[in-house]
Amino acid sequence: MYRPLVGRATRFSDNNPMPSSAVSAPIVSTAAPLAAVDVDLIIVPWFEDEAPSAVAGLDRAVGDEITRALTSKEFAARPYDSFAAGVVDGTWKARRILLVGAGRLAAYDTALARRVATVGALAARQRRVARVGFLLRPGRADPAGDYDLAGFMQAVVEGITLADFTAGVYKTGDQAPAAAETTVVLSALNDTSPESQPRIDAALARGRVLGDCSNLARDLANEPGNTLTPREFAARTAAIASSGGAAVEVLDEREIEALGMGLLLGVARGSSEPPRLIVFRHDPPGAPPGPILGLVGKGITFDTGGISIKPADGMERMKDDMAGGAAVACAMRAISMLRAPIRVIGVVPASENMPGGRAIKPGDVLRSAEGKTVEVINTDAEGRLILGDGLWYARKLGATHLIDVATLTGAIVVALGKVTSGIFGTPESWVEQVRRVADRAGDRVWPLPIFDEYAEQLKSDIADMINTGGRPAGSITAAMFLKEFSGGLPWVHMDIAGTAWAEEARPYLPKGPSGVAVRTLAELPFTVDSWPR
Ligand code: BES
Ligand code: MN
Ligand code: ZN
Image (cartoon, rainbow, N blue to C red; front, side, top):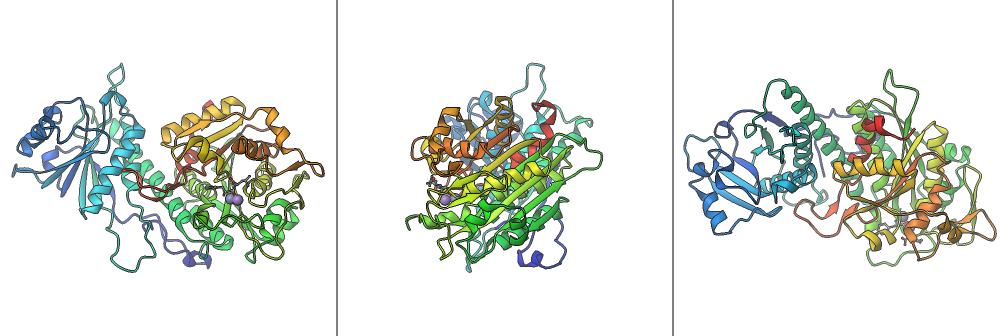
């Protein structure tokens, strides 16, 4: 679990005020020379193509250990490799350094910098280092000789913060090591002029918020289905978003019924836990009337498949079927904390998908709030059902640009594996906009087509459409289903079924929830000037 920002959910379910966003182990910056930075360990990203002398004074401080390790090829600076050495120069405050491989300088962008920072911070945490220094190395200068200092600062602070997440919250033995107090060191740069210092510190704060909010979403996705019911999910996300400054409203089953949300109610029928519709609003003073961004997230707190029940093997993973909804809620927190310049609406339909005695059955027909009827062929295709009503509600609240995020299809894992989320949508310029933002936020995405011909696969004999298009192009037909509820607005669907959860640990991402899409959603409103209108 990630503790600093919020406590246990039961605390917010009543009327207790949320703890503030004070973080226990702060991140600060300094322009002091490396030798003077008073920490236990200094982490230094290291490039493949550079000489041991690339960071002034460093090799000498460790008794030429860098020269030795590079010459012997013990350390080749490939991404995520690491090399530790002790400081022998008594005039240095730090006792140890840790080089983290950063690959070739020419290929070092903010996405890689973020990951390198996570690798370094995770290593420091495993070693239970209390005070860490991190040398900021902002890649290669642009043709004008400038560095993207703020961009790299934000990315490394995100990366350092992402290392604070702990999965084993229900372990009763030794506690996981605490996060280190971290000082980002700017002194290896030529440009630490006083003009840029406020911008760099703003980037630090921004990276901290985005990293924190990603970790909060990971906490939610990690939470088991027995503790995170739709009601509890609503209470926790409401606390998370409202303590960041967003307005939150939670609609109960009666209000959902009054809105006519037959798709959400249909999915919820098989469970004894009632559904919730969680609505977030960021309405900054002085914001223009439009555009209004509408974020919609899938909030299935557990997906058994319903009557079309899933096989037992691996079903426990379906506790994270609310990762899209968590991303929306935690992005709303970030959006409010960072004071995005436009209005943003978040809508998260939340339900269990269970095979109870009153559950919907294959062949049942449901009526959506919009009026369209759906023949349910497979009750395990529940995400698109609740999102259909969610997209309609975001439009009803005035959204002009839509993006939905969902652990929607196993087929996206077949298409893109566990590395890349699928994106779908219209018009192309809106898809491209989301793609650019996601690239920079470190969420890998790739577009797939939604040609009209695929809609053939959703034809029903009895209703307006069926809810599954069969095996071919399973992720695309799921997107085509959602498109029916986008009302012709600019709309992007992000399928995160392959990326929300890491089945195998990677150097920069431990096993478990990834927090995918939080930073993309949170950054999107800040790019409004280049949106399609
Ligand atoms: N939540 C699942 C999708 C999923 C699969 C997420 C694997 C994460 C990992 C979704 O509700 C689902 O069950 N989809 C079905 C759709 C099918 C019945 C058309 C699927 O992908 O099998
Ligand atoms: Mn399902
Ligand atoms: Zn599902």
